[in-house]
Length: 388
Ligand code: NAD
Ligand code: MG
Image 1 (spheres, helix red, strand yellow):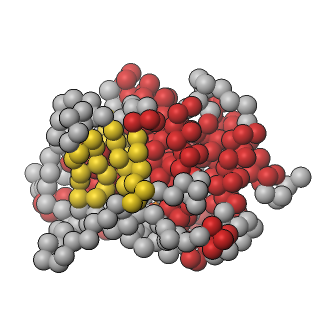
Image 2 (image 1 turned 90 degrees about the horizontal axis):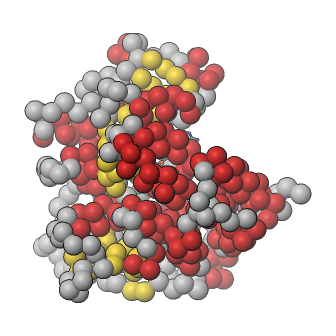
C-alpha cells in the first residue's frame, strides 16, 4: 500500500489498521510500501517505524528537510523523495495494490487521479479530489478498472447499505453531526473563535475538516462527493442532522425501505472496510454499547444558519468548474479564519461570492480546473481585502 498523508488523522488511523490487520489477517501481508508526510518528519518517521515492514519510499514536501534527513537504522534503505511528482510516483508504483488517499485538500488531487488512472484500489479519504474533478475521476476509473472505496464515514455507510440491494437507490440520506455550532445563532457564529470552531463534539480530525464541519461546508463537500462517487444527481441526495454520529448515513430504496449503517464514531472501521472489502474482519473500533439507553435523534438542517448546504447542492447540480472554485475558495478562507484574518461567517459568504465571480464552464479540462483553483485562491484574498 501507499499511504499518502500518513501523518494526518486518517493516515495515523490507517497505520493502526495496517498493524491490526497483520494480527487478524496473518495469511495476507499488509505492508505500507510508501508513506508521505508533507513537513512532519518526526511523525512520518514514527509511522514508518511502527509498521512490521519498513517502507521503501518516504515522501516529503520540503527539499531541505529531505536533504537533512537522518533516518533511523531501520529506515536507512528507504528512498526519500520530495514533492508532488514523488506522490504520483508512489501512487502508480507497480508494486502497490492499494493507495490510501489521505492528504487534505487539493494537494491530494494529482496523486489520487494518478492512482485511479493506473487501476489501483483507492481508499478515498481525500474528498476534495471528487469535489474538484469528479467527472475526470469517473472517466479514469472507466478506462483503467480502478476501484474507488470510500473512507469518508457517510459514504462508506452508503456503500455498505447499497450492498444489501441490487436495485438503484431512490435517495441517499447523509447524516451530519451539526458540528460545534449546531445550536448557535448566526450572531454567535459571527463572533466564533478558531478555538471554539476546532472543538468538534463527536469526531477528532485534522483542522481543515474540523472547521468545515463547523460551517457545514464539510457536508456540502460530501454532497458533491456522493454525487460523483455514486453517480446520482443532486436531487437524489438529502442531509439530516444526527448529533450522536452513530447512524453514519442511510439509503432509501424504491419500496420506501430505509437502510442505515450504525457504529461508534471511529474512522478505523470505514478505513479497514475500504482495505479489506468485500471481506469483513474484526475491527479495533469498539462495539456499540447496547447496555445503555440509546438516544438517536434526527433533525432537519437549518439552511439559513448554515448557508453552506445550499452552496453544496448547487455545486453538485451544476458540476463543471463550480467544484474547483468553491473548494479552492473554501481552503483559502479556512486558512484566513484560522489566522484570525476573517470572521467565521465570512468563510461561506466568500465562497459564494467567488463562485459567482467566476466564468462557469460545463466540461473543463484538468488544466482549466487547476488554473481556476489558483484564480479562486487569489479571488478569495481579494474578496477578503487581503490583496488589492
Ligand atoms: P490532517 O490535517 O490530519 O492530515 C492531512 C495529511 O495531509 C497530513 O499527512 C499532511 O502532512 C498532509 N498534507 C497536508 N498538506 C499537504 C500538502 N500541501 N502536500 C502534501 N501533503 C500534505 O487531515 P485529515 O483529517 O486526516 O484529513 C485528510 C483527508 O481525509 C481530508 O480530505 C478530509 O476531508 C478527509 N476525511 C477525514 C476524516 C477524519 O476523520 N479526519 C474523515 C473523513 C474524511
Ligand atoms: Mg464525513
